[in-house]
Image 1 (cartoon, rainbow, N blue to C red):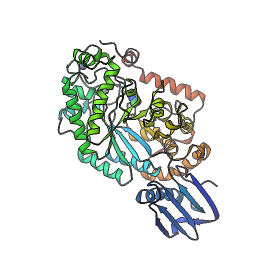
Image 2 (tube, rainbow, N blue to C red):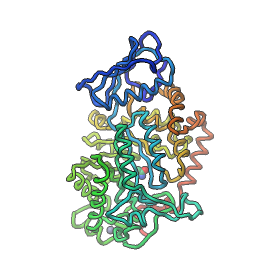
Image 3 (cartoon, rainbow, N blue to C red):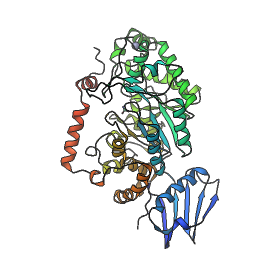
Image 4 (cartoon, helix red, strand yellow):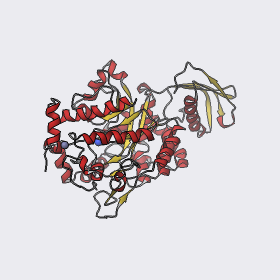
Length: 482
Ligand code: ACM
Ligand code: ZN
């Protein structure tokens, strides 16, 4: 018999006899010796005994019991459980399309059920800036609004908005009650069209540009040669640190084409002045200045793996490994740096099931091949992002994420030696009712692992959507200015 629990507990001892746990009295045992996230549940002798160090373990035991309650009668048993990784994150992109506060809370409720403990909130990008800023009001007056709703659509209806500080505090408090830490992302130096369209003087050319209205990689990044850019970034981060109580700030660092930097006197002057070899090293210089500022404030930075390309990155940065063909993240971990696995072909949930079937997500082992013993210790966890360029409503978002995000939850918690895809699929079906109660509609099981025809069609469709001539050009020639 399988117990309906996701993530699969790391140790279950079945005992004789079946019971209805809803009617059993509960007892609690506290022990300082246990790790924070550990819990033990003993269902026997007509009672439930929960043992933990404190409230977090108790909360996870509750999630396990919530799922078991759906099964009706369950066997007497002893469950002893502790996560594989300390970092189990989900990311929502609210920059491309916003979700309502109520929708975000539903997603968090679902993540709670599966013991996620980090909400990485992607709040600023080329197509919109989504945090209320009192210090830099143009980020909201200009940077929060673009000239169309759907990407690439002919409908030029103005679209946008931002979350007020009160709404953001509400989400942070909601997460705190569920032992989830909220880490905001302020992407820099690239993915900053919303910033430079609000404050054009922060770009190399200083010209007024509109927000982007399609997906892609864009050249109008922050200038790395102007002192006022560093002042702006630190000033904005001050406001962010005041709002978000976390010790961790994600500073992006991904997809920053160097075309403007190559042709900017000020950027070139910094390269010469600091003896940097090229624009890639200039990005290392930029990011390290920001990391040093955060360090002074007692905070740690997370960065996407491109920040390793300079070879200069401060080793306190935590690397989010999403697409790293050169295996720089593994080298970094092998030398002592911390990494989080967010693999594009497995953990990115905005791609169709034909491209990323559920089994492919589930079967991916976050302990990457090139990690040595030290490197394995430095994988602090997993994270699964949902990017929303082509996801305009919450039902679509849920369809894309569920059940694939649940698979990542299991890989974040359950030891690889206990992973079991066939039982996972059955357990997901048993969770359907709980997710419906929360307001989450999951993809039908016939869609989870499509056959070869659907796989080919989905991949062709997806390519057609994302490959605009402009983004192909930028991808192929990131340093070519025009
Ligand atoms: C990313 O997908 N650009 C991190
Ligand atoms: Zn510049």
